[in-house]
Length: 212
Image (tube, rainbow, N blue to C red; front, side):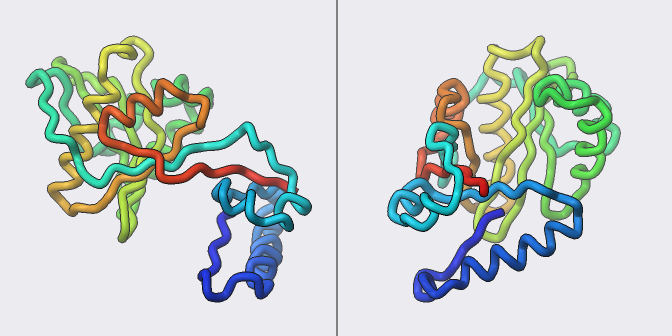
């Protein structure tokens, strides 16, 4: 649950009312646990949050942003990228279930539900044999593209598939509509952070999760 209050209306109890209303809605779905997310700098400045919520200061994520692509060039034909179609769902679910430690059924449900969605898309990375070897998901907002769910088939990891695939996808999306790209990465995941930095991403914020 993410709560945002306009700066001119903060410290008036608005956030508390929003949270209580959200709780009543969530309970209708038999969800017992709510996790809140906030920027580290805001939590450090707000004593109320530190007293009212359980905070794990070590489990944090970086929010990273790239405003444009870097004009890279890659070996032609090494990796190609396109938006997924429904016939790709089985292949996507096969390696995503392994990458995210989920069941094949869960991965298949996600893939089928995401492909063709107007505000969400999955892009697949194909090798020279036209085999799908990786994927990434994109939420499309009015202000930016939010990237998540990067997965590369274990047999093709360590070969630059993720770096090249992300970059080509960013170029394709930029040609459709220019807007910034954002993503989040766990603070301790230095490998992923480095991969994204190679594609022009910079850390713009650090977020922390809170629970009651």
